[in-house]
Length: 349
Image (cartoon, rainbow, N blue to C red):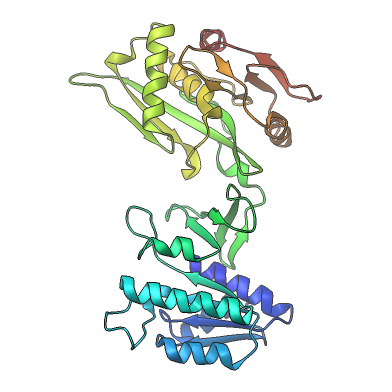
């Protein structure tokens, strides 16, 4: 996934500024780390490597020098001989993390702990770990794609809604400066495709919502969503059946958010409805048009928060029109069309 690569780059950046950093690896040998560091151009005079899993030895090395930061890769490989359980067990992980926390506070060292997650997506080990540390960051991404997302779930020093976007290149992880262009197609418009802008923290991302509506030949119709809440999808489908009298009860509906992004805000509801209608009616939507708005149960379209940031991102990528419930107060080059009810969206199909 790239956790070790990211932390090696962070350690190298600190060492480049004449800060002494210790990188402790229990998963890879020193030669393997050196090969990766050479490839990533991360070899620095103040960056020290330690290949060890015995906690007392690691602790003695941390205390022997005045380190500015320390990287533990990974917490599940370390063990303390004072605890009888195997490395990676709940008791080992909990006790060693507590010792690391105590070292960080008493010696004023920044400690980065790399950990693994379970199939359910939670931290492998006791849940109390999340309460012990100052910040919890999840590194996400589709293994088949180059994009990686660093998402904050806990942060005692700032907001938790921010994300970092990276691309895995030959020289390692680099910042995805043109991130929005990775999530929508610039080719000819297709049926079942609609554009929206979501906010991840303070960062606006342009996303393509893809829908496939197909006739259900037998049994109950399927409703599947990738990157969008299935319960909310069922609500929007019920709304379309009630307000627009579209017989979706005889059709399967599939929704996909391009780029592997998971939408957590309701401001993308309008784009989901537009993509479903586009696929159902087999009509294309102009790919220079974006849909912004939350859809309520009574069919009204509500304003998306921080609208100016979304419109500014649209301007950066050459979009021309926006369908939203209310025109913005600030001047914009985007032509904004008001649609305060779901029924008015049909006029754009």
